[in-house]
Amino acid sequence: MISVEEKLRVFTQYLLNKERKWGKDIIYEAKEKKQAMLEDSEEKIVKEKRTIEERSYHTIFRDKNKIIAEGKNKAKTLELEEKNRILLDFNQLIREKAREYLTEEVYANYLRDCIVQIPQVFGNKKGIVVFVNERDFSQIKAIIESVLDGFAVEYHQDCQDCIGGFIVEDAEGRLHCDFTVENLIKSNYKLIGMTLNGFMEKQVG
Image (tube, rainbow, N blue to C red):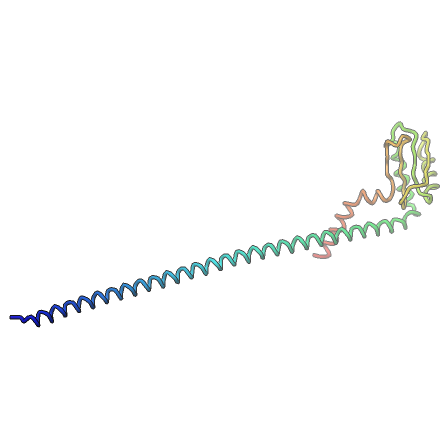
């Protein structure tokens, strides 16, 4: 027969074993939860880090492209400004060089070719006004008298800023034709620019 003391000891041992198992389960569960929380935290940290890196990359990439674009635009603007300055200087040089040819035969031929066009431009309007500078007056007057027939010509020696050539108007001032050297240069401004630009591109290349 089992004594009361023995039953009490067995029951106590049972409770202790059960308590130990329950405690172990709690500790194990706590460890699992702790591990899960650590893993979740690490995953969140990795994701956040990746997000920050991606955001930083996109920001840097965007800023980089913006800086490059601004640099290209600035460089292009400076290039255009420099080309325009060179073109203006080049046209001024052409004006100065043109003066050297104003006493040569090629200039006389240019004047004659221009005067020959007057009947085509003015048609039946036989009264014309010619604006010419003082230096070219005698030469242009002589060519007009030898080429034009039936025109009543009035001369004004006040062609302002003309290095050469002349301007013709009808008597009413309705038709206007510019045969000045300046206008010849302006008319070829685009061609001069394209030629000069092509030359500069070759020099750079």
